Length: 77
Image 1: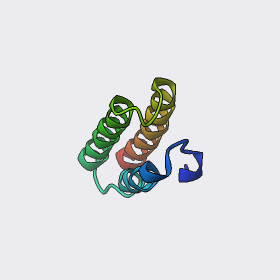
Image 2: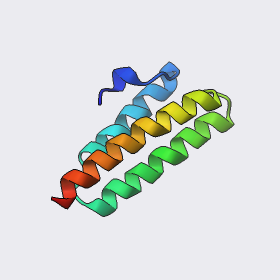
Image 3: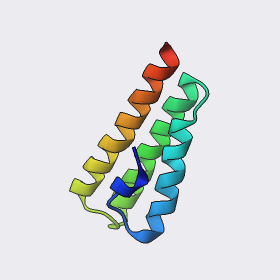
Image 4: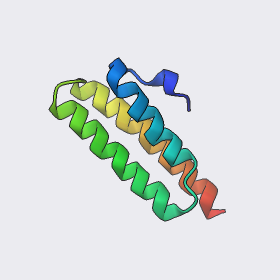
């Protein structure tokens, strides 16, 4: 997944890219889950302060969840 698919304000794009990179480079299942949880908190925070809509938040959480699931499958092999 690329960060180009993120529909975010400019100020939130860099942190989102960093979290995605952390998920994709996690060296263990525990770290992958930790970074996935960090992504959820990030999205909830953006939604709470009104930076993104609830619909954008749902899409963003789906993107982070897919990346986390992909990494967990990779690490379980």
